[in-house]
Length: 355
Image (cartoon, rainbow, N blue to C red; front, side, top):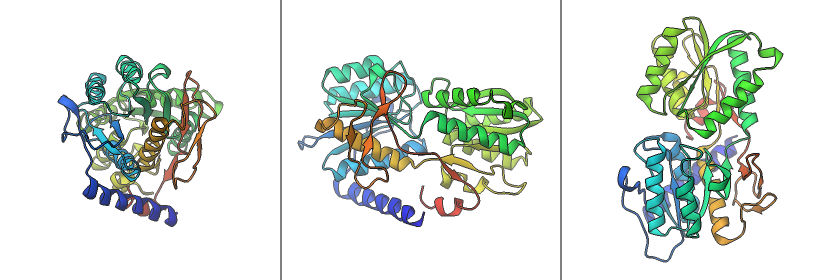
């Protein structure tokens, strides 16, 4: 693990050096926090459209994306829409088309709403992939997935079973109701929950915090008020789990928490005792997710791949390189970063220094 931590820290240091030397554009379009981007240098330009501004997971993903692009001699443009809504992402995509970028990588706020804009991009010869949260198969050439949907669903469902003691009420605190990754994981959890071993668990509500800290806080407080016997909240979103962790710990609630979170943000809430709201949680490395998104975009632009099942591409020193493209089960293809990783009291202090 220490070797892996060193590798990630080294990558972050390299990225910081590159940012100082080369510059990176964080252009959000008309409705985003940005610095104007664009390049007349002849470099290939690779753009990433995040879900929204102020999301730490997106910022870490953008770090990895930028590092790989600039190390390959390209220019990275990162767009951060002000709100996690499809229309803000559409505006960003249209701006990128007008700039004539070489590729667009998008973490989608809606699976279908971005289709016309992304089809326009592909019609202009721009390569399109998505990462973290997918668009439909007609809107992309490749989906860069964090981990298999069922693997995530199983890990989260088993955590709920374990933390609850195998019975009682539990709830989900998700991001937006249109977030494709969140919905896929939740659907998988519901299907897994039909097994006999989960029969004593009662899912009372799926609440939506829209990946906004205050709304996620309000939704957590509402869940505690409505369900005084609530045993577990599962938040498969980094913004939601941090908000919920603070509420539960501040209120000394007996309700426990699990889900997907950033170690640096959740370290204060992870522990074995009654004074810790989260026994353990899961995630993957968002920096590596951004790196893999960039490597796949570069391979698409260079013509090394077309996004077809069975194709492979190089991803530098990443652990599973070369990566193989597989069937995504929705009529399109995907490449999977790896398995979800468990963060608990035994390792959180190591990982909180990494990301």
